[in-house]
Image 1 (cartoon, one colour):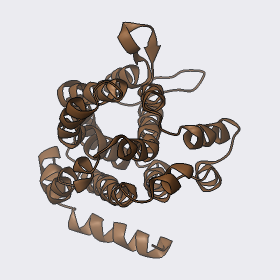
Image 2 (cartoon, helix red, strand yellow):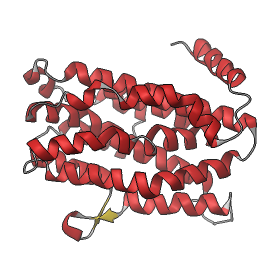
Image 3 (cartoon, helix red, strand yellow):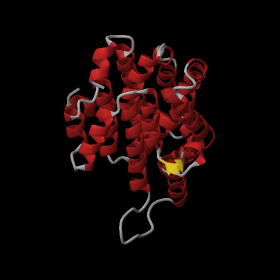
Image 4 (cartoon, helix red, strand yellow):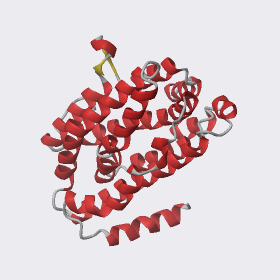
Length: 284
């Protein structure tokens, strides 16, 4: 999609969603997309351990860019500069900071120490023998100061994951707080329980021993997002958008873009699962 056509699409969306005035309005607007995402066939295609490894070697990029989306929100909502000054809505600050604590420094395995959910996912990949070299190479490029687009292109990131992260990065770089908050809330936190509950049940039945860390990771997100982080993120989004139709229109753009990107991502992953697994593994 060209920049001009993308901008035209955003303008059209803004016109079409100008009457949104609440979270309920937005949830109703994106419900067809959400239903399509929750019903995606990828969740039932992980039939053996090699399928799971292929899935994880791509899904790990969504785990990573979730943290970047979260930190983008924290940067927009709170003051992370020195000297510190009060910034933003106090309720939104509290909510985002509490979510950051849980995602960036959760209890480690067996209650030992603390870890980010990204690092927990890497441990799950190592446990089941999934290839972590590509994601670790990608992270090293970022640590050295390389831009996200450049690192995606040069680290041999799988195409589906590269597209998904690119779409997330477009939302982050928009610097639109309603757009970022809606992508985070409705494109991530809100859908996690519905996406992964059945997957956890299937993996627990078939691969519990070799995937115990992955199952723990998914169960944490189902619990946290369903019972705590999801509702907290929803309250944060409401505090950001208030009763301003223009802000809710921006939020609709972010939520729709995030869900569409995830659907495309899952479709790309599904195409990799069950194909030439040796070839896939060599590049992921």
